[in-house]
Image 1 (cartoon, rainbow, N blue to C red):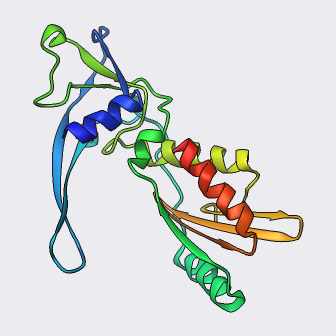
Image 2: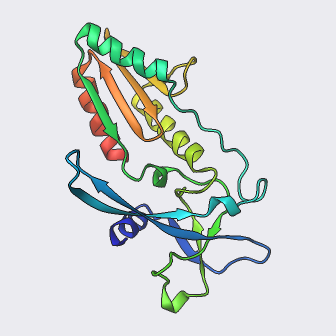
Length: 203
């Protein structure tokens, strides 16, 4: 729980404010997961703070929610190209991906259970970043990821918006994203290294 709150603070996920008149408050709760190694032994205990998005009202707390995810044929084609051309294949996972999404809507949330600031117990969290559980979080995260890809020089496919590619000096990079799981391949090994470093610096 402390580790999760540390990530939330690092991302400046919210500001503690007094709830403005006429505004609604979204609840939140802790979700706990036991992560196991392939052999069944304990890997780690994970805690995630999740907003009670089911209490959000359309048109008040959120508008658009659609976020594209990679189609399975795109994933298969990417892996097939890597196998046929003997390209390296990299798999990446963005930790706390949704916390990287910037909220456009004005959303207020209760303080996390067990971690209410005593001196400011009457205040609520005005969310700056998207949080797991919010209706608009996947869209906010994908919007941020897309802008970072474009900043690096990647172009989004018109056939599958979760596929990005770059042709540079006769070399190729192909990236497929499924929510926060990413696969990267291509014959531009130097470019892929720079892309991974760039992603590391952004997320």
